[in-house]
Every structure is written in structure tokens, then in C-alpha cells.
Image (cartoon, rainbow, N blue to C red):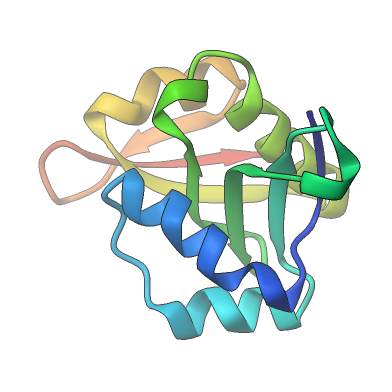
Length: 126
């Protein structure tokens, strides 16, 4: 598995991963992220001719709009690799997330604070 910038032809694959994680993000946001080079994908390296998108991360500036990994591939470090790749491209990144996702961001060393909305948090890492 390796992480790279998504290509315009991968909009459907990225949306499939995000939809599979039940994330609400507009296709226009994903398309704009890809056009700006701000959408990353983790792809299988089993067969270069048949790369499969295993996970995706959409940035808006320094903010992570969405990060998701295919259900069967969770727990294999793919989400971590995507966030680390985003950090390689930015001085810092931020994210807003639900309480059940908090352990993921804590494990990545994000500074986390609660938001006004119960069970919602904001994280930042430099």
C-alpha cells in the first residue's frame, strides 16, 4: 500500500470509500480537492495495473474534510498513512470529528478540544 495524490478519474472510487464510511461530503468538494491536488488516496500495490483505492483523505487547506478506509482494510494503518501524508504536505492539519473517532486522532498525537456540540471534537497537529 502507498499514498499518492488522487487523479480526476478516481472521483467515483473516492466517493465509494467515503460513502462506505457513511461520511457526508459533497462530490463537488471531492472533485475540487482532486483538482487542487488536496485529495490523497491509499492504493494497493499488489498489481500496479489494477490499483485499488483502499482509503481516501480530502483536505480543504489545512483542514481534513474527510478521511476513510474501506471497512475490510481498517486497522491496517491506512488511515494513519493518509494523515501522515497530509502532514508531509502541510505545516499543520486540523479535523473535526465525533467522539467515537477521537481515539484515532489521539493515537496520531493530535491536540484535541471539545466543541460546543456534544460528542464533537476538534483536533490539531503540527
